[in-house]
Length: 512
Figure 1 (cartoon, rainbow, N blue to C red):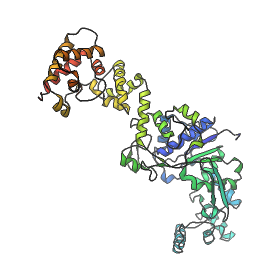
Figure 2: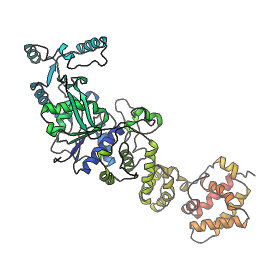
Figure 3: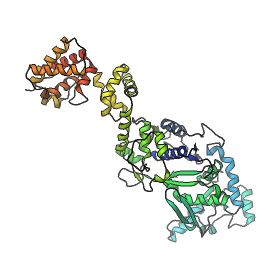
Figure 4: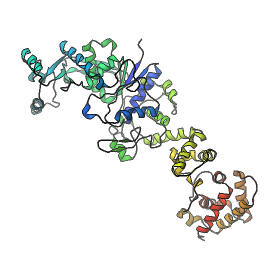
């Protein structure tokens, strides 16, 4: 191909952007960048009855969060605008009329009652899938069956009509899908789809083809659900005389439920308690709320890495890729044909890897923000020390605060299960001795010093340190497990450590 590669993501503003749509956007972006081309975004809002306020802005913000913003879009127009189909409405009529004049489309004046009667008639005749096609159209009210004078009269008088494509009765339609190979469909399985609705708005099929042609789209990368429509689109390119510039098609595999049985849906996400939208969304019409990956604590680069592997693989054992590395490694040939199970645990794993690879200073900003929400303060140095020992135990940035807050807020309760088993006279003896050494020691309080003072306190009382360590942790943190205890001691500081030990000795009763 000698033309510049141009791909597009074309969502409808009907609500939140499903993770499957985000993956489609990502694959289009990766392919465009890999080929040195351009990634466009077009809002397909021809069906105004399904338009939801705020949905377009949601799409824009989601792509911006992920760092895959298009070069051309409604908010960053290029030379092929407008980028909303509703703003392109005047141009579609001429293309529909062109097909009528060429004999590839026709006017249909059938009422909803006529269509219902047709379906009932076919159902009674045991037709499995009743449809308006090359056979049934001969019995309907259209410009192929009505006298020419009557057609002109109906048009002149303003009778409502739609324009339907005239599907040939016996023709094999073929396309070479970049993922699935050759796809062949016989035209007798296709129906005469509506191209122009009675309100003058084009259907997806007409607008999609016209827009892709006028915008110079070279590759159409979209979901598998559009594969049944692909033969119709091939015919439209042929009837318009655009076969030489028809884009190459690639139909992506479905995202499946965690058990692999069926397409992933919001209901599945709600049932299992995980997000399937990039960001939180509240439907302005119904008030229904849906959780997003962003607000759930997923990092955008981790989410993209996870998303890329839902249907694609690099051909080796690597799993961690930056966005630039994904661009370099990406190829449509390595996208699978079969559906991919959605595994939220894998998404969490990716988040953990990216979290741990961030610098302590980067992660400290997350912790500081959470601390400030609680009306507290913490300096960058101390915040960096806390995240350094917490990040190996964290899945989300919020875990740094939720699991590490004990280093900034002294516990006022203690794990009763641990206390009942581990709090004894030996612990009290060691902690009293340790507190005295902390108060009297004048040297710099390092991890080594914290450890040596505790060991000496135990040795002097002939008590094995291992027998009391969990209770020591309980006294200082309120729980029986956590990060390296000596690191915790140094972050808390000698004075605060002594205060916490004093409080625990006062509150906890010996269980001997």
